[in-house]
Figure 1 (cartoon, rainbow, N blue to C red):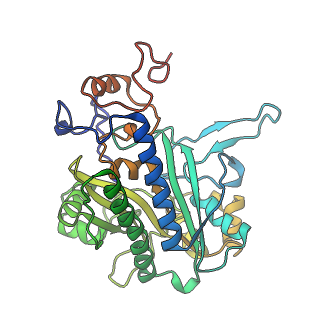
Figure 2 (figure 1 turned 180 degrees about the vertical axis):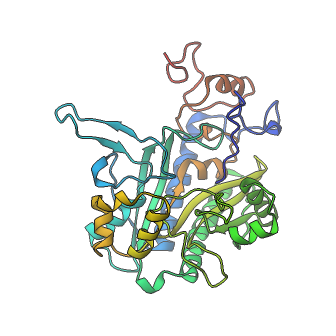
Figure 3 (figure 1 turned 90 degrees about the horizontal axis):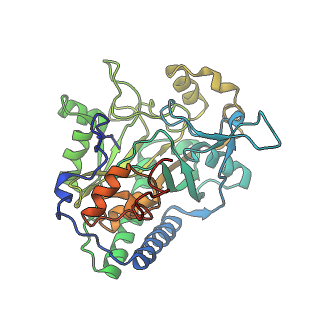
Length: 374
């Protein structure tokens, strides 16, 4: 999702103005009822994903070694949360940003056959992420990966899988809305669009503005082609690491990339809202090209990259579906902190609390150890 956080604004992480000063009322005021609803949302979505995409739940690591190269590099500049075990100085362990690479290795490790995949209940930290009403330092997502054949590395297979993911989301919203008396909003049919076409149609618009145009019109969109550069050297839409999604393969429509973002129109925030990022993963040929384009050829020496280049790792498609982000949407919350225990700007926490918007666990004391630095 293209970011809109204004870092020059000391209160730039607050929800849109129309949600403040009494313009928004939380769906739940009882905290235990909210927790029950969160559990229902996550359990229902996970079960729908497993059924629709043919996935099996597996356990996942909380940290990986830096030397393995298993951590997701995101845009290549973010700092991982890192520590050294007490008795093993010099051993660097990292809390993953996501399991984009680990999942592909896990398919090999578990011997998952083509046509079947895995899903994990991933928890991670992103120290350099924006902290605002839709972003958190704490990441929880259903990280999934599916073994595919080389012949499945095409736009038709990508779209078919996206439709299965979207049906899981649509069915989950229907169940949540029926149980809690919320009005459903998602359309039954998902719209597909490409970043290449949207740039041609709206050349002066920002990435976020292009997302808003699409989502306001169609309500639910899969935006194809994330990552890579335009001819002018600027990002085509948003950044992607070079070693998981394929963002250079040419499609039959003339555009590039076999990946994308699942976006919806958020009726509370009145803006586009990312639910999932996913795509067909790099094969050895594409990996080498994308590493070279990003100037990080040294990664070829990492364990994970060697396993991909020598054919040990299978061809895959995969992605991540934000759990708290999806709950924020399904339960019509204006701030992600209403549905997860995180950390946010203490000044913003105070403003929201005075406005009747409580973030889980925060703002309870004058000197709240969860909300303010020592």
